[in-house]
Length: 196
Length: 97
Image (cartoon, rainbow over all chains, first blue to last red; front, side, top):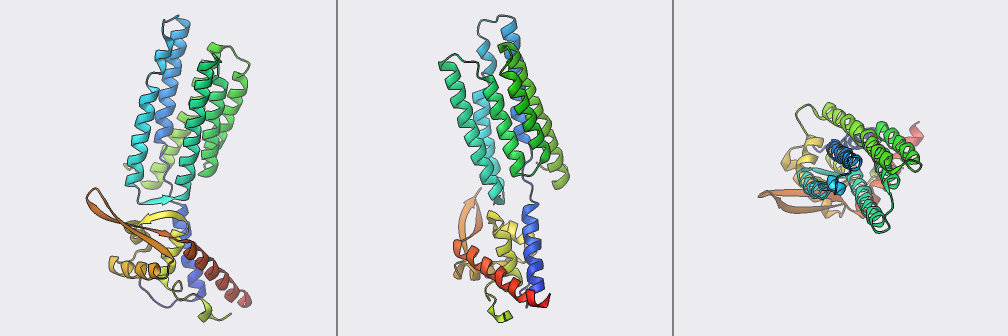
């Protein structure tokens, strides 16, 4: 693109085409949705199994969560380092998921301190993260899946503790695993197979 | 509204493309801007320097994996100038419609 005299119509075309290129830069590959979806799903199923078989320390089922948190931090930092462009959407998403992490941690701490079954609230937080992300990146399946998780959360408020664990697993299946794979497919279609 | 009233710093094909790209993102690396604008490295460097001298963009040089890296972001003055440029452009085009 060499420097040359341009008329106002060309100016508008340049502005439109550059803004359009920036907006079509879809950087969400869905990896963390899939990673956390399967991690929580398998942990919740293991936790349910430990509970129904009266295992001595059923809480061991969640032992991989802190490791998942550390992995996520390292993965996110490395991904950010590799990116050639940082959009405002990336910034908003980071704030959303940091807020989600803090709320989840506080909810779990409160649940532990007061011995409360806080899974309906945890499902509600999962739904919120997915719902907002879907809105920000304008990906309707995420919005719909997040909304479905709100319904699951509502049901969980009236369910027994054991059923709440199964509903938690169902929630991550609906709002993380399914839309995560959907996002990955869209990312691959846009960026070509073999890229991540 | 005369065509001459349009900001001469922005009224250039490559500089306008760079500012239009940077207004949509938080920051972008030199290589990304080069890919998106199809400009040559030399020409792009010159135009980025002109935008920087006008106070429209910030250029930050650093090292990533032992390779030099240049990233650019639009300043508040750049956003304002772009806003005025688009407004003036609309004023210029309106009577013709």
